[in-house]
Length: 93
Image (cartoon, rainbow, N blue to C red):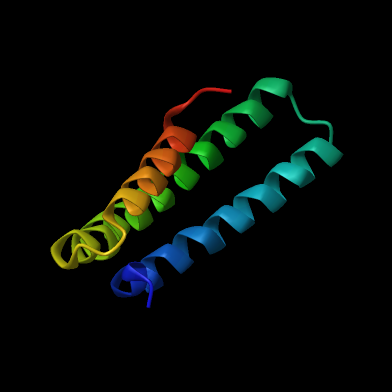
């Protein structure tokens, strides 16, 4: 069972908002809006995505990772997985 279930409603609200923002950006591009206006909206989507990811990551650490460490279940494997996920969200492309 995923550890983010307690925040599922909030996560879904954020994802639906992101979906609306992306559709709005598509309309902006179709309407050939000013580049900076499109970039500002894209920046807002990136921030909102990071916010949703942060909730899930926090829940994962407080749930799945903590439980695995307490029960000593694949802790090395889970720590490596966690580090990979964190690197993915913190590295600049």
